[in-house]
Length: 242
Length: 243
Image (spheres, each protein chain N blue to C red):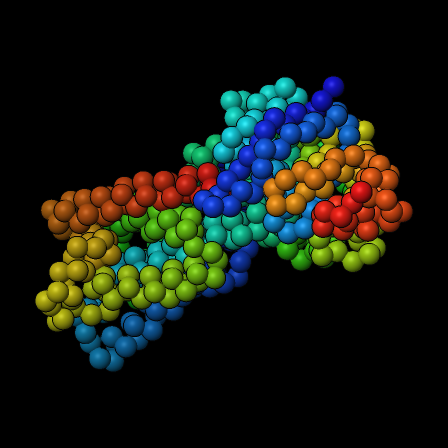
């Protein structure tokens, strides 16, 4: 079953077409990456799919619910971890998680259970009482993902989740993302080729709001006639693939 | 419930900032003590404690504008608001969640100022309680101004515009530091067309027990508070849509 079905989604800002007539679908439990250079339209797609921005035309259906006509229903099954860390800096890790439980209307019991689960999953024991604003970039990213996971979303949007992280922090975060595969449908945007290749079931490469190709990393390499995914990306974006 | 969780978070963010505690609660206190010391050496009618204390309680609210604008601007900048827009929180939850926590802080600031004023010789009357009560509509006026600024400015701009420009403007045009009649002319007219001087004269009238003078000033304050709150809500919703 398709978790996401996108039909002719378009977003225009004055003279700029940020997303141009996008059509694709994402299967339930799939980890799907949107890859592209700056201005490719990755973040705009996430904003439209998470009901933060209205499309200029077209529609998308998340678990069968329209992002235009049924935005409340869509919001109840999704969560977003934005490009910026998006945590409350003056609150502790635990208080940030409590905040998200509170805005989702959890009972005290469910809140405690959820925080305990996420603490185990993301290894928060040592930082639970620390202020979020004092954490390293890697820990803030972990917290950002935990805050998105609180509501037990069916579809999770991760917008550049490892941006600016060092190699170790990125590797840790990759492990966390891998552990979520199959349990939740993940849409991930990234600039990093190796990240998309290592984590994704399928990858969509975009340029100037247009979808250039959508396939597995191996098939994309095959199409571009190279063994290197980075080389394949460059060839496809430059329009020199076979 | 959801709104209260959000309001609770905002209260914690504001109160955990040491600068907030200094400027919000400590700075007005310093001003009362300093100006009362000046008054003791060089008596000026304007700085008599029954005129000074109401003025300082209103002046201190300029920092509430700064607090409310800063927290919204920072939440917008860090994308926390973007994250929360994808949750079941409604626009009303956001507006109330940002507004309500600052009202008790404003009242606390007012109470501290009047306690200091009592120690400096202000007569203890029931009017002080009324003055604390009347600070609520005035605080809504200043908070609405903060909501408005926070919805359109980034946190650096908020620091400049709310922290410097607005604080100074509301001070000059309030009649706290000098008698507006001494300047007169267009300056006085502009000052009386704005809400700041009315807020100060409202508090002074209440403290003096001249309740017949309260209503016109209160209407100015409520009118501006209403208009600013509507403008703030519209601008907040606009930036919410722009996400």
